[in-house]
Image (cartoon, rainbow, N blue to C red; front, side, top):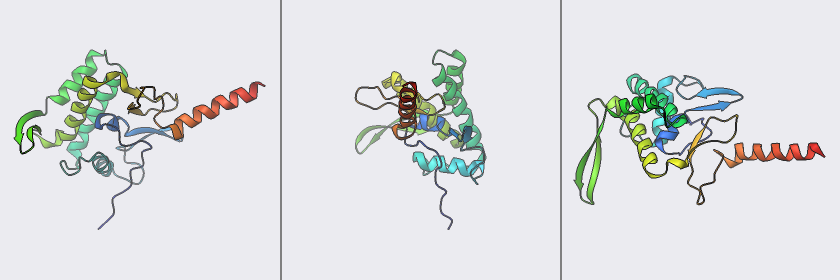
Length: 188
């Protein structure tokens, strides 16, 4: 049995909607895309990596139809996050959300919810769009793009005081600190 390929992305573990946006990142000054068939992977293998990374692999299959729907959701979310006032972006997110619904359930633990899809290939796309709604409903101001001009990653700021600026302090944050230090020492 072949081992699963490692996730090459520099930032994982964000909420599903932002994790989907982070399937595009900067690598050596160029935009890399997990779903573009790079890194020795096919596009569908990249989808399989993303599904595993987000924990959705047990519920949804990595196939071409799912990938097409997920790319639709990624574009809709990218536009909505970039400009929350963009009505056409909201319309695109709503179009993705049309493909699923929440069914109320009663579980042994009490009231619950279950997502339902007429076409399961829309499941991951709908799940990401639904997650974005939940982020907007709880803390929209904490949905952030990395402050580094050369970074395209997004994150949900879970810091206590809500002042996180970088996707990763060890990468983008350190670069910014080093750049400021270099500028200060160069002026002297």
